[in-house]
Image (cartoon, rainbow, N blue to C red; front, top):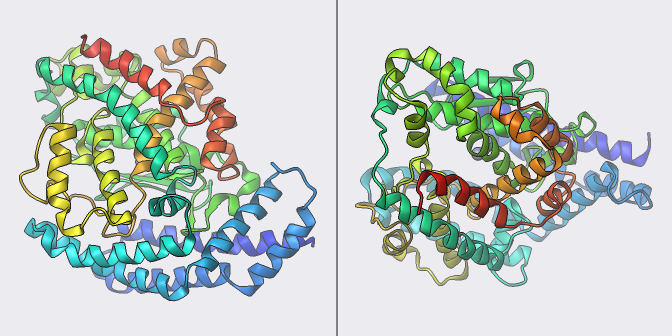
Length: 508
Ligand code: ZN
């Protein structure tokens, strides 16, 4: 065996363990009886520790060094060179963070989540303050250990969106506000669309049937996938051969499961179409988080869920093709609803308190609010106890509404309690990138609009597979974006998309 083969075989075991963790996690959220939680935590912890020990071992150091020598003169874009280079980068970052600090953080996460749950039930942010202060204190130490040029938040972004910085995000948000504010203004001053029919009774089995047919039209392969029910919808993969999604059916709110399944199947398309050659490798493993995933970053992953959910799945062209089918499944619920009424209802734009229920336009404002607070927590300019007040101020400024309590405000997301500081920007970066990928595909594929108008998704799917999905984590997010679209992160295609769609819905 060559030195690289030894290295690859060793790293394949790291990937195997991360896939086992994913499977334990999937099971816990979809199948496990409640009493199983008592021991599942320790099972997960044991496997996570084994993965961590294996990856940070002397053996990895040795095999990595030998593999580096062997691939030194190979093509810089080859899978072998990239796998070695990325393993080295993460290996060095891991070395900089003291083991005790990580252990303290991991021990604090479940404690913080429990306290957050209690604080949210009591609608009292003050109960959560000490736990969040401790969390942020630990992250500031970790940021110092990792190192950063300008802002401690940059070190946090390394885990989720490595090409972003606090400064770039601030510019991005400023650009986006200029696009979103006028749309929101027009949407809220023009009359309410009719939405009563969305909350009629829709049997879950028929919701599933419709959404799954569409997911398969998009390209989701159920021979290597499946759909289950969970409280919080997600996509998770155990290599490209086993990519699962979940959803939550609400009998009295049709859009939740339908668009939820479109969204998660967008994530699944990415994972299912990674090049078989890089299966069980560092190019399908997030080594920093020890998580089995093939997407280049949270933002790039999210760009694909949103491309399929919003740019395709909430378009007029899509519903022109699919509304008759929906109508045939739900003749009583939708019999008195025109295509135009349906289209306007699913694209209603209104400020709301809860991020996960927000529409495609105001969603970005929810993200801005959180990210600005996170940056302030990390550089010390925001005092944790003052977050609810700051939340209300920013909510008024961006959304024009003030949450009546902390459960509808600063306590609504689990992210800070779970220790995912720095993950929010991925949602907005994903929105921006989704339009870049979609625009690039249209440019590369003449007649794509006609395909979409007929409900034919094969060429779009193939273009995305060939230009993005297949590479997994071979390229970092910005490099992956630039190779596929020819540009770095750029708000312009997203601006044009929003203005075209919502300009037609809410003429100025
Ligand atoms: Zn998503």
